[in-house]
Image (cartoon, rainbow, N blue to C red; front, side):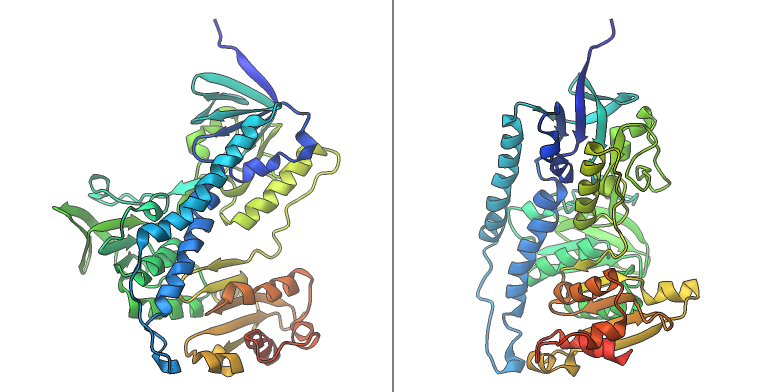
Length: 452
């Protein structure tokens, strides 16, 4: 006898950004909310928020002992990792639990805790129960990518999902990867007293960033940490308490291994193709401009369908999907005309729009200007010798094509350029159409724009 299928008006798979789909428009709908882990998703539990709370502590620790050039003698007297981590997760874990408790308390919402997989077209199975919905939202996010390296499967390792909850600081941490996760967590553990080695097959860290920013970041990071760059990893092995990572030209040894080689979407784990939903070559769920998949009533949002894998793009997706389901006669598109991003390492990095290498590859004409922080009064105060702002503009329209900042407060400084791009201002309007506070650090942006 076929197993009965429970029917809902709306099924949401994933209680990260997916949890925010449940606006007041759905208060009278019968809703199923599926989550295999803690409510709040990656951002709250093992991503943006805990990592930045750790970064802030690391920033403070890093400055200690590095103030002599200002005439201030300082030292780092100690790091209490259990208290640092306790502050982070003592705040985060109750939020995740309260989010689940709230959804559990609603009469119109049924919470399913566990792994979900499609058993057929628009039919999901969770712990032996089969459910379907008029609308299904795929918001199951992404997971750490584990590369195929000889020996890695036999060695204990951490990912960004687990490393922030270590009970004690490692003495020697080896990080595989050179992207934003490696950069941020490398900074955290180095600043808090660990010996950190970064192993990356590319010759540069933050390789996807603008070439000038990537080169500068790599040089600065290499002066702090042991960076084994530009050679493929040939083997990972363990001998006693030591883990070794071998490349074609050297060996790096530590007691703890962090794999930070990127993230992949979770559509395959859900078995979405069994429902007729397509995946692209990167494993991302295929969705149209309104975030509809090829199966009527099935929608996708966030990291499961978006290679950018940013919380702010997932938030935009969530608003659009919630509106489009509730208002089918007034469909909206997410606005990705200017997607900024930032790396909260040391130094910080922020960007919006095209990189110079992309414009060059496309054969697109452009103007460029680069201004160091040191050219500003506040840069003098900081004695900053490495940070800069870079802007790229169209020579005909005079509109900004891209902006890239490396240095203190970069994620904050970039925002005025994001706004200028979004509202179609020319670089001349951005530079001269407002007053810049003197001697604030924003003057580095003003100077870069004026140079164009």
